[in-house]
Amino acid sequence: MPSVMLRHEINCDEDTYWSKIFFDDVFNRRLYLEHLRFPGWKPLDQKEDSAKITRRVQVDPPVGNLPGPLKKVIGDRLSYTEEGTFDKASKKYSFKVTPSTLTDKTKVSGEMWLENSGNKKVVRLCRIDVEVKVFMVGGMLEERILSDLRTSYDKGTSFTNDYIAANSL
Image (tube, rainbow, N blue to C red):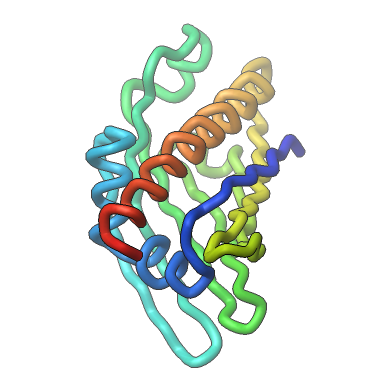
């Protein structure tokens, strides 16, 4: 199963990242809709207890220019639901993504956590696994998903650090 390990430095402490960035709807709307220019992002539900925070969000990423075989399989529009759990004890967020197309043939999951790097900064680490079981185009689709994720996380990091600075977080 192809995977990617993403690593980005974020200019805030761990508690600030989780509470005022990652789980903040205002930040996420601005990130996805304004900065990344996704057609859609909306929270579906979020629950919290003493041990964990669970949430579901719907994301409509841009499809962009796809090679013909991929466009035929995916179509003109795509959305996915991310279901995740933040374990308060380990401070790790585990997630799975369910796409609107090829639901039974696509598995995307991962885990995100932070490591302190000193000076009120953290390193965000995110491991994402992707598997697409579609004859002839599965591997091509896996590579495209991983490439798009890497691009979004890279672009999102600069926005996140600018947002932290602008809001004195």
